[in-house]
Image 1 (spheres, helix red, strand yellow):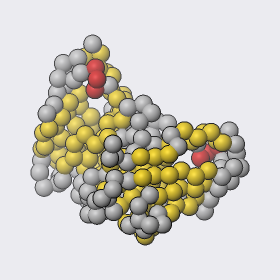
Image 2 (image 1 turned 180 degrees about the vertical axis):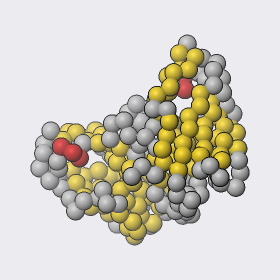
Image 3 (image 1 turned 180 degrees about the horizontal axis):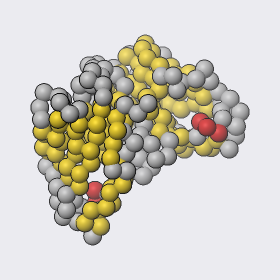
Image 4 (image 1 turned 30 degrees about the horizontal axis):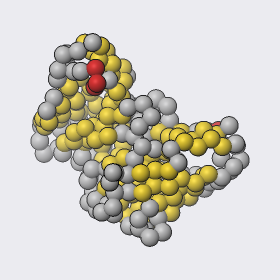
Length: 110
Length: 114
C-alpha cells in the first residue's frame, strides 16, 4: 500500500504565485523527509529535505513545513516561476528505502 | 561530472530477451539503490547494496531480476525473460554510509519491452 499519500495530483499556478503540495504518512518510524523535483526524461533531483526534530526548513524559494503530530508535511514554492514546472515527489525514509508519493505535476503559467 | 551515471539511457527489447543495465554511483558513496518508476508514479524501491553486500530486496524484485555490485563500485541489474510489464524507467541512486542520508539519483534507463 502507498505509505506516503501526496496531493494534489496536478497543480496550475500563475507566475509569482505560491505552489503548495501536501503529503501525509502513517509510519512513525520515518525519520527523513525529502522532496524531489523531476523533469521529463530525467532522474529525480533532491530539492530540500527535513528531519522530524524541526517544524520548518527554508532554502531560497522552497520551504518545507512539518507537523509531526499530524504526520503531515508540505512543500511551499514561493514566487513560482515557469522554470519550476515539473513533477514533485515527497518521500519518507526509515533507514534505506525511500517511500515516494505518487507525485504532483506542477505547471506555472507565464 | 561526478554524479550517478547509468547506461544505457534507453533500451528497446523483445519479450523474452534478457537485458542488463549498469549504474556507476558517486565515487565515495557506499550505498547503492535500484528503483523502478512507471508512468505517472513515484519511484518504487527494488534493492540496495552496502558496498558489495545486497542487504534488502523488495517483493517487486521477482526471481527474473538479479542485481550485483561485485567490487562495491558499479552495479548491474539484469532482467531475464523480459515481459511487457517490465517496461519502466529503472533508476539508480547512491548515498553515503548512513541511514537517512540523501540519495542522489542517476538519469535512469528507460526500458521498453515489445
